[in-house]
Image (cartoon, rainbow, N blue to C red):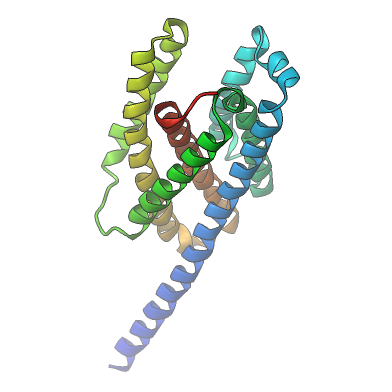
Amino acid sequence: MADYNTMRSVAGARATQIDEGLRAHMSKVYGTMSVGMLITFAVAWAVGTNAAMLSVLFTGVLRWVVMFLPLVMVFAFGAAINRLSAAGAQLFFYVFSAAMGLSIAWIFAVYTGFSIAQVFLVTSIAFAALSLYGYTTKKDISGWGSFLIMGVIGLLLVSVINIFLGSPMVSFAISAIGVLIFAGLTAFDTQNIKNTYIAHAAHGDQEWLAKSAIMGALNLYLNFINMFMMLLNLLGNRE
């Protein structure tokens, strides 16, 4: 009986330690994501409200560089994450956030400021609810992953094609379907971040956990940005 009580005490202490660590880990994820969002929208506003800068960045070849730089950086980040330190990964994420700000700066020249703020609020509320669901649900939604990733790849391909077609109907369909896909990814990624921490917390590899938090922040950040841009296309009022 004494051994059983001891085992229960040890198990309880370990569970408490993981719970505290998980809260700290999720705070790191959301905190890093929030700083990235702040950088993105600060850069986007600074550039998007400056007609001279917009005309330089979104003209000629430089336009394509600005548009596709964040995509290239995401792939580069995924390839380099194991070779970077936690501090290096965090710096890379913030530089990426600034690059994303450049790529979406045009929204401040196309949409009204009130409309951008309104859609940002709607996105924030939806994101918070979806992330909370992913964190608290007892249902295993890991099966969503492959389906949602296939959806993202399909959206990316169709979006690139529509750059040249310029079809409003295709753009509307991309946005409508995209909102659903990134909504699902928000819940999926949140649960995955939580489960990954629980699975590796006992190993005590703080450097790995720190980089895992940054990668989690990147995934949630991308979900938010994509939902925001697609909702803006659906709901935004143009200048």
